[in-house]
Image (cartoon, rainbow, N blue to C red; front, side, top):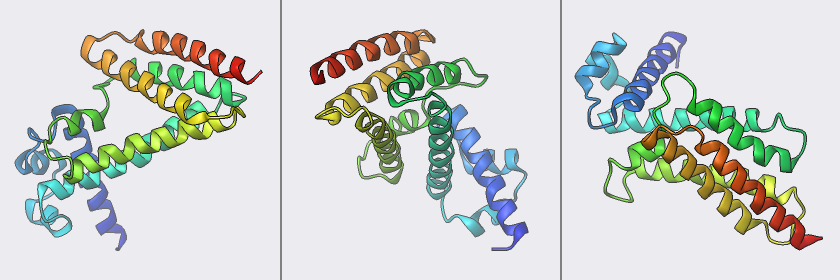
Amino acid sequence: MNTSTSITREKILATAEQLIYQNGIQATGMDLLVKTSGVARKSIYRYFATKDEVAAAALNARDVRWMNWFRAESDQAPDARARILNMFTVLKGWFESEGFRGCAFINTAGEVGDPQDPIRLIAKLHKQKLLAYTLELCEQLDIADPDPLANQLLILMEGAITVARVMGDYSSADNAQAVARLILEKHLAAEA
């Protein structure tokens, strides 16, 4: 792929991602993508056979970028316990950022009924990656069974994201962090 081709493809994906995050998949048609990106319809179809392919590629790109950002921000804390709690601080900063519209993966998965649809599978993969990162941190705590703790923390994060989006309550990250602190203390005390 030459540089010009790569730039055009990235422009299509960046525009599609922005439109999908703002409006959802159903409201993001090819006409809007053409108009917003400034890329001709014929050129878009040179890279992607359907709107669904554009959406899937855009969501895959968002997954990579979001996970890299989330890990880098969360990992700024000095140890695993602090990183776990910092995940909620990072989420709150995201909630308070301009243009926050909730989780793109929760939003798009809600638009698709078929659990085997590529969009739903991308959303599931994103949540599996978030769980894997959380489990990685829990394993560093040196507790006997880190899996239940990682699953509990994932539910707290997902709940905080949903409450922030649906209710506009960005303190949901603080509330989830407080519960995470209690759960962490319980798991660590069981090991002592």
